[in-house]
Amino acid sequence: MKRISLTQYLVEEQRQNNSIPAELRLLIEVVARACKTISHAVGKGALGEVLGTAETENIQGEVQKKLDIISNEILLEANEWGGHLAAMASEEMESIHPIPNRYPKGEYMLLFDPLDGSSNIDVNVSIGTIFSVLKAPEGMGQPTEADFMQPGTQQVAAGYAVYGPQTMLVLTTGNGVNCFTLDREMGSWVLTQRDMQIPAKTKEFAINMSNARHWHAPVKRYVDELLAGETGPRGTNFNMRWIASMVADVHRILNRGGVFMYPADLRDTSMPGKLRLMYEANPMAFIVEQAGGAATDGQQRIMEIQPHKLHQRVPVFLGSRDEVAVVTGYHQA
Ligand code: AHM
Ligand code: MG
Image (cartoon, rainbow, N blue to C red):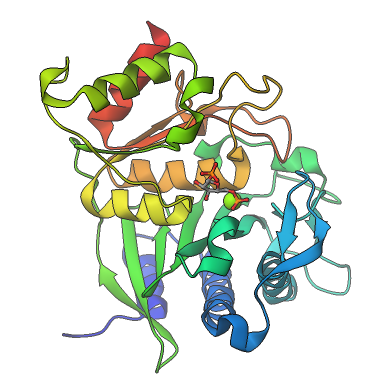
């Protein structure tokens, strides 16, 4: 098999489809290199003294794990000096991180969840990094949070790395979805899946069932019908998976279909769901749509939501088109 590296793929995309400007290519390569470093730290586990909890909380009031902080630092340091970015934002930082004045500034803005699936870090279950790339608004001066308030449709690239039995990078620049596997010996990303497509139909769903008693009626109705199986209104049996790492759940869905749900519920109406719009839901929605799937908040396309806060949360229904349409339809009924 002829091996195509991430670099070669990006250069060819730039030449053939003109879909990746040189600066964006550089930015993606730097993010991919940072993910390689994170993968290395994750892989060391206890041997690298990276497991366990740090003594801090993030802006969402969640206790940070050591690897959350390490991964955030790795991404910041890798991306600060290259000249391709104007600012960054992260799940682990309250406010945006403008590029320091000692470095040249570029026209892109990078958002990330440095290590998603934090509850799985210490138990050796797959976790990941999610990222989204926006363009800085025309004529932007010193970047502010307002410059980031762009709907997901404005993303120019999005991707995730999943740190599992294999480390993989899944990427879109708006021209389909491709997957690269990290060759750990060579230290290089190798193209292993081209043009990933999510089957429109599925018999597999993913939701944290322990929250069932808090769900709103449309979610309850939908999941009850799935659980009723072949004797219920759907007339067929459904299977369930829940990894509690969005990256790993989405990766499974990209490969064999499925519907992933993290709905809002009745517990705290000021908190619409758990997942964050700007650096979790939007990049995943971009990837899923580019692979022929769908992503809504129950009412509308996630990518069309106008954000108003960097860390805002959003209900998420994504994956195989037909099932996302059913559950979204129940919300609109
Ligand atoms: P995190 O960014 O703090 O890791 O939280 C996001 C994660 C998702 O990866 C996952 O789908 C979800 O939280 C799991 O939540 P729960 O613990 O409620 O099952
Ligand atoms: Mg997360």
